[in-house]
Amino acid sequence: MGFLDILFGGGKKKVSKETAETRGDHMPDLNIPVDEKFTIHFKQNGGKFIYCDSDVEVSRAIQNIVTENNWESEPFFVLNERLAQKFSKEPITFTDKSRDSEVFFTTCEHLIAQNGSILVCSNQLHEKKVNELPSNVVVFATTSQLVESIGEGLKTIKKKYGQKIPANITTLKHFKATAENSDDFLTYGSSTKNLYLLLLEDL
Image (cartoon, rainbow, N blue to C red; front, side, top):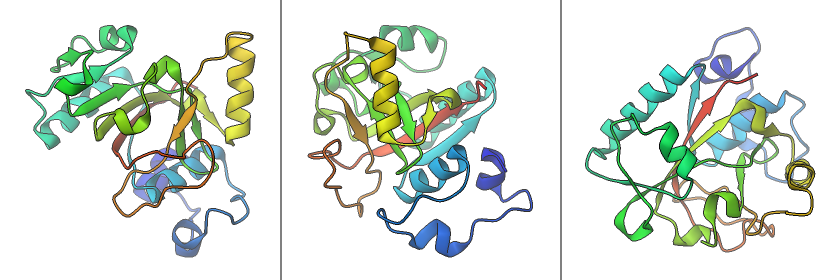
């Protein structure tokens, strides 16, 4: 069962209500594929998940998000110039000043299946802390960025960047007002965000 199955109830395999809703953070990992595991935990965290299998669907999803939130005249705060260039044809404008926007548009390093969090670093945030970002966040990621655990994500970052390991490594995890901050070191001091994840299939 893939993303579409778990989102829309297709397929024969079902995730029990107890499995999907009542397992604690410290329970043993679910013995299911990383894509399904991430989806379950991410939605438990309060994230809004949009799976796309083409750039056309990504474009449509962005337009729907803008319309849904009345962001037609709201510039998106972007720190990644390449991301702004990629989406330059969309009906949105960009700013590099956080005070001028209520929406942060970004990429990420990895998607963590173990707890449904999003691993980011200075490549996405520069020197900013999570609580300094706008309360609304739109993340663009691909399925190849899915990993099982934070440890695996950190190892991949080390392998990718070698001696130039980026700073400000943290996770985005709290996407609803009732969520309580975790005591793990990568989410300490983080703040609740209204978060959309645009996930593009690239495998």
